[in-house]
Amino acid sequence: MNFDLTPEQDQLRDAVRALGRKYGHGYFVEKAKAGAHTVELWQEAGRLGYLGVNIPTEYGGGGGGITELAIVCEELAAAGCPLLLLVVSPAIAATVINKHGTDEQRKRHLPGLADGSQKIVFAITEPEAGSNFHRLGTVARRDGDDWLLTGRKCYISGVDEAGHVLVVARTEDSATGKLKPALFIAPTDAPGLEKSKLDMEILSPENQFLLYLDDVRLPADALVGESLDAGLPALFAGLNPERITVAAMGAGTGRYAIERASEYTATRKVWGGRSIGTHQGVAHPLAHAAVQVELARLMIHKAATLYDADRDLEAGVAGNMAKYAAGEAAALAVDTAVQALGGAGMTTEYGVATLLGAVRAGRIAPVSREMILNFVAQHVLGQDKSY
Image (cartoon, rainbow, N blue to C red; front, side, top):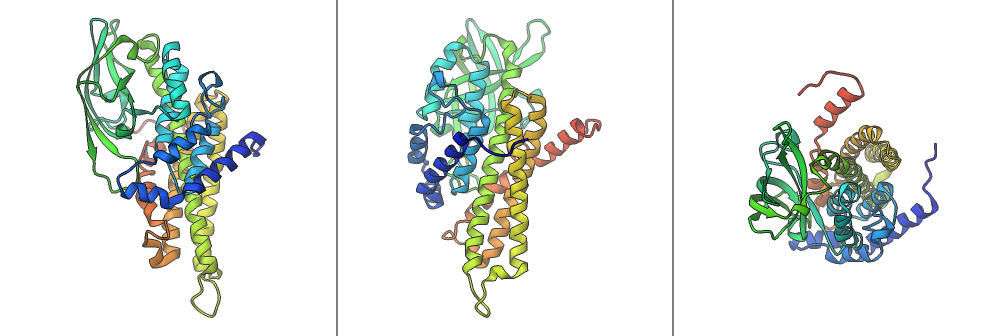
């Protein structure tokens, strides 16, 4: 058992940390409040190779795994720049296309995903079905050699920044007549695909959208994989990386909040010339939050290691646990930081309250804490399925 990063991973962590601090939380907040995107940070991260660390070298990537991408997600978040599209584009879309796409799809999309010049977002969630793909209402049907997609999607991140969207739909199995999942790479400007921005109480430069698909016509090669049989494994291929990188982003956000609060409480003096951090009522909650964040980081490392070793079932359990732990730890860390700073904690200047909405969302998406507990109860504790 080895908890040390490799020298290359250490160098990656240090380099990404330096990039994140070059921009900082002030940049992140400024972009979010202006309704703008973190274009400069994304492009520089792409030029430096950080967006493609998990993409094979033959397509311009770094040849690493989800462990390396989790490092990128965590360190940018720890610098106050949690980029949600790192989860959506490199973690989900690139993994799905690399593992289950055709050779042509890999050649067409992976180089752009690796250097950041292309973004592919992910559309699974629906208003009625949520993320339960067994009940998805978006349907793909054949029309000659083409596909026609019809349905609705919600809470789809970054559609306004992306050239393509990876749509999860259902197709009819000709042998059984049952609907089965399939994934399609659709241009975001395709005729019949309309988007509507959702107003969210989250300070983020990345926007959420409703998608409406009205007979969106796609060519045969928009289907991910060589056949419809690729649909289910392709869908599951993206879920573990999603959970692991979301968890990494949460852990990084928790680290950022604790660091900000610790700097303040170590220097803020009110009574008797002593810093407020000398009082256990201030120090102990921060210490408790720091413990929870570090425990989450350990589970993230375990989950990423299992995933990169192709131990998918174990990675599924660890990834869900990591996402749960990091979601709880990040929310605790930011809330504790706000409390430790008092009134200053609610100002934009001190940069912690600006993260309250994001960490609260991290306990809901991409899978809620309750559904993770259901998963653990069923698959770890051997309980009957409760839903």
